Length: 106
Image 1 (cartoon, rainbow, N blue to C red):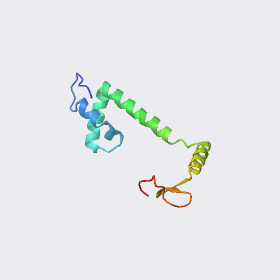
Image 2: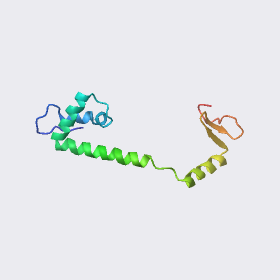
Image 3: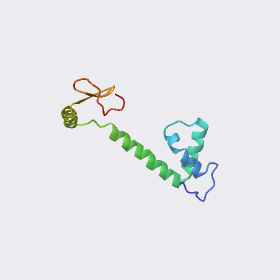
Image 4: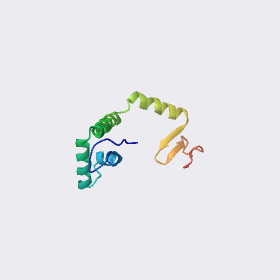
């Protein structure tokens, strides 16, 4: 839970931090975005939280772009084949084309 800090703002820390993810996603109205940005600029504790969350998003975004190594893809394909299963958009099916009984969608 956000702490209350001993300073005067038109937007309190709890409100600013509650909208931090919406702010980072660019989903606030221009007026609300300006209020939150102004609060973050004037409030060091909230600025620290903002900086951390913004940096965390960058790191996660970069890590999620990494390609799966081809050797891992091959190992997974071999394992699926050895289980006599194929993966299709409709779900898991056996290599003979019958739905896999373990697949709840089948």
